[in-house]
Image 1 (cartoon, rainbow, N blue to C red):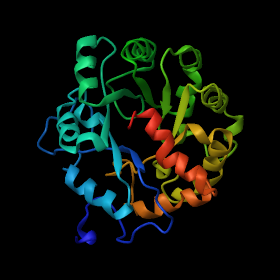
Image 2: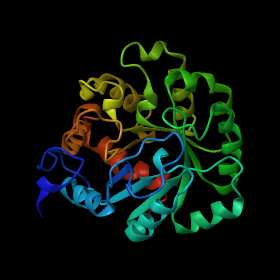
Image 3: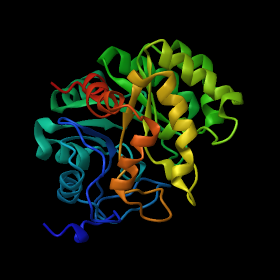
Image 4: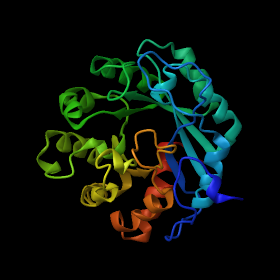
Length: 281
């Protein structure tokens, strides 16, 4: 394998930390530059499942979760095809309107879809008003809601999130500020859901909080891990559509050693927690 040729990642070395068997990349996308782009969405160069598989091999990660990006809108066909190709080592999070038919969710569930994402930051597909009906739709299907929202949006959604009848997964460190996060009203909302056993946080895309210094997220990450280690999961965010400089995925994985110094905690974040959330056998 020519690791240097893997697109959308820097570096060629494996992680320095020991990666336990059954580890899961809980957040990545695939793209097809020839596929239609949703209105108002940003196009992306083709990013193939086969290249992501090569990245996982480099990282020593066995399983993964496909996340429908805003680029392809409500058309989940590309990711459903990748999910079928990946087989039982993969799960998927779709993007759906709040008026989607239950039969559509049942068909997707049979293929390995376990949740739906509301991107409220970089997509015009869904708004804050869509979150409450989405939670009801997903609860009926037994799915979770994945939320990509600013910290202020999370604070504004506090009553809806607290009342959500489904589990809630906060994307990318819940987009909390890197300083004085505990003073932000969103911190209390996220912490409440974590400690009640209804919320999760993805330790992913640290560069979305500081493009110049992605590892500046350390103290916030340690606060999350310290508060609810059993509710943390990790993901690459490959092919890094919101990064201004291409990161080294092995270095991002090695950052877990600082965020979660105990090996047992890292095993929970990489293996045990995602196995529960994404229903890996």
